[in-house]
Length: 281
Length: 185
Image 1 (cartoon, rainbow over the protein chains, first blue to last red):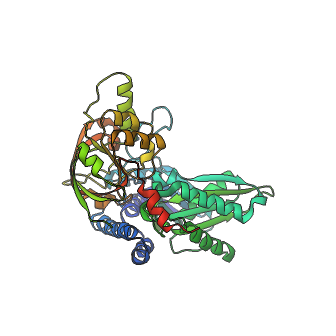
Image 2 (cartoon, rainbow over the protein chains, first blue to last red):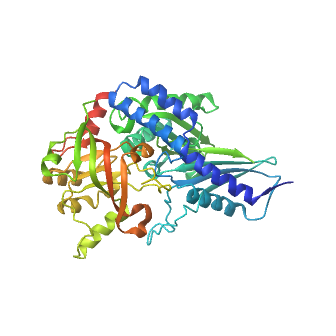
Image 3 (cartoon, rainbow over the protein chains, first blue to last red):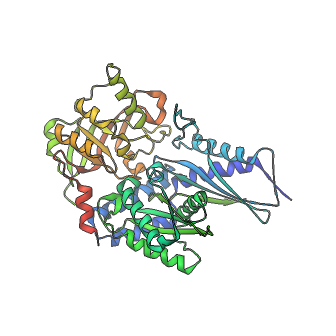
């Protein structure tokens, strides 16, 4: 049994919150750079150039890439041979978010209750936490801040098996077209296929938070990712929705076994600020 | 891209009507920051028959909820938020004299109708370029609803704030024009 202190988890989460919000992953920066040379629309190239400058300022001055520093979504892979000492695991994560957002000058964008009062919690807690228990004695924490401009354009459709691949493509394209400039393209499109309602959504979220240069390990799904990207980039939406061929940087697909009568499809869109940071304790 | 036009905010009627969809502009002067919760409060104030905390004539509103400023800086990252969430309130504010809007994303037909009727343009700033945009904001002063935190109503002094006219006062829509150029069927 390996012991990990709740304080070390809190510290790690606070650091991840600042890093994820202020430092654009290298892969995304590289995409902006190459696309700012190949995008045929002059307005689109100008937008991509502004995003590169923005990423430089954010990194050099430790400023948020985007003022919407989002809900803090934390994916935790907890080894089954780990014992957390000194406090509650989930509370340690919330405390890390609190520290990171308050001390790191990140925006507090969480209301305590969604319908009646909508009062800001003033420390960006609670975080959204997804825990998976895995073999081993490690703890992997991945923090992916998620802004509302893109989150609000998420879609879940409970297709039936007869809808097939064409049905899936239509759900993805319709979601991207409806999102348009609202979701700050060029976007990352996360697609979850299969499972049930909640698993499809979780697959889409995980797909969004994947590294931008990753591919689905199943070649059929990797091919579907490429095909969907091609379709999305024919919509003409372009950078900032002002027209162009770069509507998405990537379409990532994740899937799960499903019921004989089901074909759920979830689409979670991430803006171009494809922010995430990870640490292994 | 067309050459950038320098314009001053608040807008007078001539400035508002001179902007054309697709124009790239640099705005200097004073703009007003307001988003969801401030819009709701403004419209509720009017519904109660009370006076607004600011005069909206000529006002250019920027849909933004900035990140907190670090010590010594006027403001943190401050890019545009999605304008469509303000659509329910916008026609009422346009009738009160609102003369320009800066945000990102599509607007509802009833907003476009009010824009055309009152000669109001809608501009987009680049979403997710909050650190870059913050450089053109020189001063941030909360005017009302301080308790709303990042959603407070505030005045922003800006110098060469970059934006693109996406819908002009005649209803021309640059989102649809620009996208049509690159759409492949």
